Length: 110
Length: 115
Figure 1 (tube, each protein chain N blue to C red):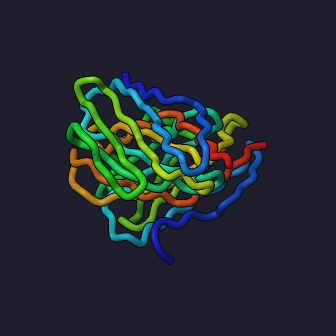
Figure 2 (spheres, rainbow over the protein chains, first blue to last red):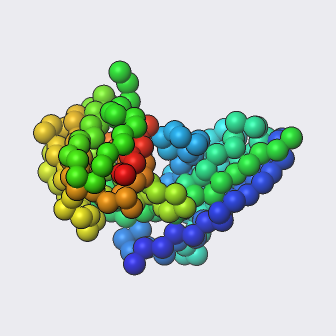
């Protein structure tokens, strides 16, 4: 079956760096996506990795190790508006299918 | 209108009612999706339509019936629902061929409460 694991909650300080980990066990794996979801709003795309390594997009970076079934999302220079749920999702080909984790609720404090 | 829109945003219905959720994408995409999001649970994929053909049905009960009349519109017809069907129903769309990782764009969702 498909299994995605990520921590339920994390707390970090404004201006700091936080790393949200995600491990996955899926068949037909073809990429790893990260989404941000504020309460009551739609998930919005942050980044995705197909190959091993680090992808950087401004304050957000995402890393993938396919051999370890592991990814992380790195958020730098945290701002209060970064308080949200961060969803890890594995893409499996043949049907455009995304399998989501339960999400990590990040709280940014002063 | 831009992106993916969903109506209604909130819906309260009794177990014997029939209602429909509507999704429209203004992005020129060729695939559309229905997801269910319940508290403390992962987003669950319900249906996938690609080029207006249903390509995925994740063992969803028959009281949920999708319809995709064209590549821009997607409906979810609801009848004789149960209280445990109360959730946020999200629509998404994407562009791309089979098998290639593509970003999905989500609508704001319909918050459904079954009484």
